[in-house]
Image (cartoon, rainbow, N blue to C red; front, top):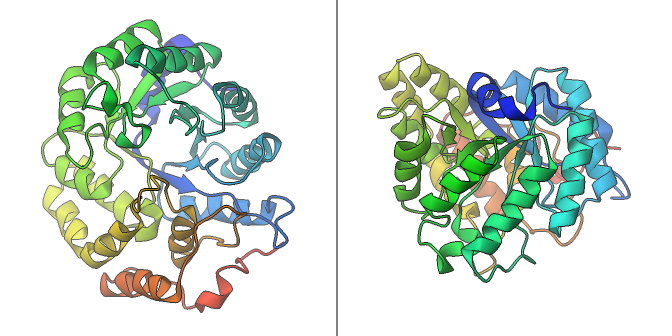
Length: 337
């Protein structure tokens, strides 16, 4: 259960959700019959080593609710309160996502990221409000609102979620504690307006390091959450720490040093009309930085040799530490089970 009362979720987030929260994708056994506890524990330890404040525990892979609950439980046990673990409410239906929140909260999650599943097709923004309200009412977890073009809410507002909708959700639900402000992406307009309107009331975050670190030159952003920043090793947590301490030029030096890796990372942005994150690519990127790696269940993305070579070379060109293991070891995993 969360360490705060539902009514105190915003105060908890303001105090506790600082630094960089990346992602951890679940590890599976080689035969894909179950999750891989050793691999999950390895990834949590690596996350701590690299200086991340926590992780989104990804559910947008082929994983059951009961397996996901054990995933959270294992991660929480290994973290031993050293990480903020975020429940990923990306199961098939509202009912499954609410049940997942109950299980994840009991297993040790401290917050919940609220995306919207492909089967949710609202006819009006009021339907978005009702879905979000039902989720917030059903959990005591601090909720991260997530305006983003993937959900196709631009049919109602070009900002992905209108400012009026965000304001009403904040007014009606005290556990709305964070806004992951990517509305209108690739423009930063959604972030800019959400920051101006709501940053005094809730934590406002821009998850994309290529926007967030430069924006820290202008606004006192306390949190970058949640994206595949583990690909860059410890660079993003270091840059954010420097910026938070006022060493903005040093933070920007680190930012510029990541240029080749940043350009390569742009290649995993959802495209081709699928509007789906290539989690296999993210898992490979994490493996390059010392995480477990290992196979994912189908349906999943597929990586070609030339793509893996490009991700690896970009880290080398950026001067970021990269594994010396050959790519054939990726699907084996560092902690095979």
